[in-house]
Length: 494
Image (cartoon, rainbow, N blue to C red; front, top):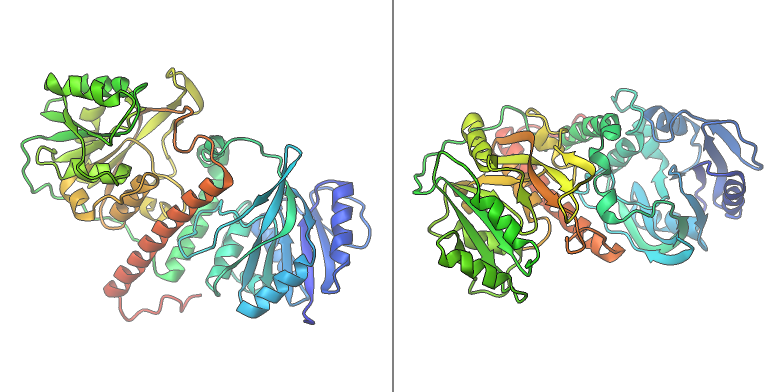
């Protein structure tokens, strides 16, 4: 092993940064160490590179000009890191074995004074979200950075690292090493339920627009880009009922009555019903629903199967003979914001001739008091590029409503996480989607939510599933585009 590595990392503080320089220098594979800083600093045995933003395209291009070795190790986050035993040697070795353009590894995490393992997940074609966790260290082959120098991006302030990663993924498979090769000191101690909404905050708007630009260009280069206008829907099938409010539920005795009441008070110009699929509740939920059903106020379904997730319960409802033309979501611990929600949603179907309508929601605590970040309207969606950007973000919004014949054709994945996102991707790939940007829905955050506070294993499982369904949809779009233009080599421009 005689390849050399140039190391680049972001300055954190003088003691930790000098320690990291010394650790790099202990490896015989290291050729040069560069410390990036926004202000002048003094460290020994390294070269200093002053930059305005660590993750900008101009910074990545500058690093590409500095690389003289076979590999470039990048650690451009703001966390303090320490290298594990033989970390650089192992990264280079695996890159040699696999000929991967980029490798990354699991890491140990120091958080609140406690050291714990932080395993990561494998990268796949659908891992397009810009917050994919590679840890704090990535090893690139030098040719990846050199190729990046010729990327035709505007001078983006935030999306340089994202663009570099996507460029690497077009050059080969990104390889995950399931070994703990370094330690990261974690300073963000918020729960997963708080972190997941960072990208919709107004302060992140400029960053999100840059990420969308880079992702759209990547989809174009791999032949997965969808072009507007998107097909409108013809509502050709007849139904006795115009809309059905679908409520899947299991053990929500504290909230199900609120949800049902918010559905019952809807004022509409059309006939609607409420279908509640009770997935073998044992806490008193079933008794509440039975009392409403006996009064003729809702349809109470207890499935014959006992292996259903939320998605499977949705299938029970949409294939029920009394399901209406439009199937409208209401989770068992949420509420509609007022009595006009259902009318607004159905009006939007006819206004846009769309197969799916997605609204906006307000985050609340259990007592329905607004909590940060407030209203989530997914304003990053645009009519001309929303279906493409949907492959980058982690959710599409709520409440969600569907033209029932389309939903019956696609079916809902029988899972209890990500089934809504899977539907949004599948529908956005072939049909027009309508958006309502006013708050229609109250989304409660409380201890029983599925993603309020997740451990690493659960977060990884959720992220792996969503990446997988992105991969499915990405492959489907590439195949459809090939049929539309079978003679085009989508990688010619790469």
